[in-house]
Image (cartoon, rainbow, N blue to C red; front, side, top):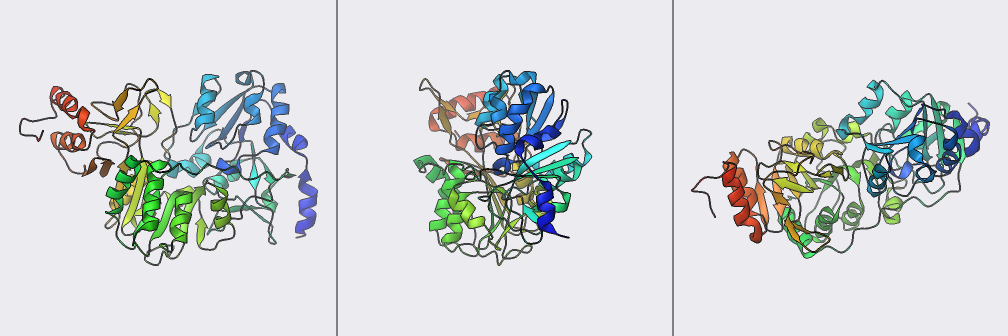
Length: 447
């Protein structure tokens, strides 16, 4: 097999490649940092000629050219596996929609779905000596997507890190239909979290005190998980392992502090396992050709059987709000979609099944509206239309700056009492009155 000749034969321009897309097609646009750039620009030029083109993707890192055409709703839908700010704006324009998922199941959705993508186009790292294009830090569901696509177009970016793995971390040139060489833009960065607030640090302290040596970590994205990561990097913890959905900058800091060895992991010993990654250039440089880091499909990283096989698994995630029944919303503000379910429930379930494992849902006790009003994130019931990301039976530890409570196995009045105990003091009496009205409070409860 002459790989160089095969490459030359499949090499084309972005403008020629997007001619493969027709009206009514489903088109996969990669994932996160693998979303195409040159192909996106070319697609924006072709899209006004087409109707009812349905794109799939998620975690957009920068504005898409296809979003900027005139009257995009007349020509396309954007179907997102995980929403971000860019996609939230597109919802209001009538062409962006959230596709609810349990992230661990996403590869199977592709393999079972009735409407597979006819065309898949995404960024990859340059071909290696064996004919493989690395998906970069985006293994996630990419191979399942490629398995169902009729036409596969890769956009080579010299700046895409080559992320090593165990399986399904790249695609061979023999499976690729067209190759486009773009302008090699810098890989889109997800800005480093700002300085930790006093609230972030308080929450982080409660959680880090619960982490033993040799624990295996999963961190979500956001200020609080980042604060936990910073505190871990400065702690005396040792021999930590990593098995996570998203690899973030905090893991690089923990690794550089010498805290990560992975030597106590029962599976993938010595490897930092992740489904996708996004962060600053520091993160991409760290992942590039690093044999310690293992890029793997999400059906592996988020499988509760794999998570539960790792002793002392520690899962740390954010949420939007919680109600007095213990229902957690981590993805919407009422009916307004903010992000997505992602793999939070996968890790909540898996961590609890792990021997010594703990799952933490953390949030600030309050938030401030645009007009300066302070409101509680702990509510009597979730707002109308809010999504229950984690059911009341599944939440393990809940943490605010006022404390940490274990909600497992509690009766409804015990659960309400525990949640109110870590609410902001200014809202506790009001929450107690609400609990009494809902008959989940008893006279002997602590006040």
